Image (cartoon, rainbow, N blue to C red; front, side, top):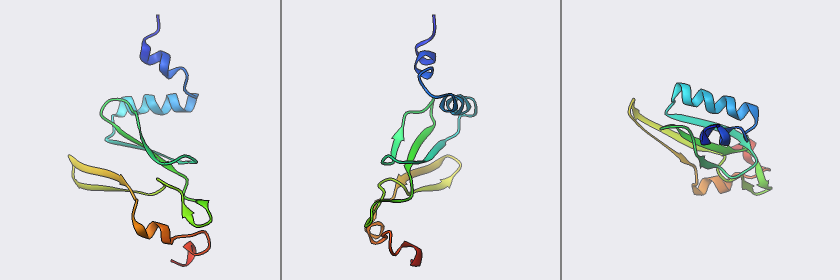
Amino acid sequence: MESPRRARDSRLPALARDVLELIRDLRPTYHFAGDYHEPGQRLAAAGETRSYELNAVNFLRPHRLNPGCIGVLRRAGPDESEFAFVDAPWRDEHTRSNYRTL
């Protein structure tokens, strides 16, 4: 009988299974997947890896940058780091018509 983990993994597309297997093997601290057209969010990942999905860097509406498309990874040392999505007021100043001039 298949393990519950393997059964869950079998529902994923082949490429996603390959990435998940790589994460399990290498055990990175962070994993980022991007250019999806969904709000950025933390994802469940294997083991201790912190996994995030980032939205496509684009404009949902002409005057609103996609939510969760930009994040900052701060690293203070080999064992001290944090990631956060950018949710700052300046983000709303960037529009489809002016972002190239900023």
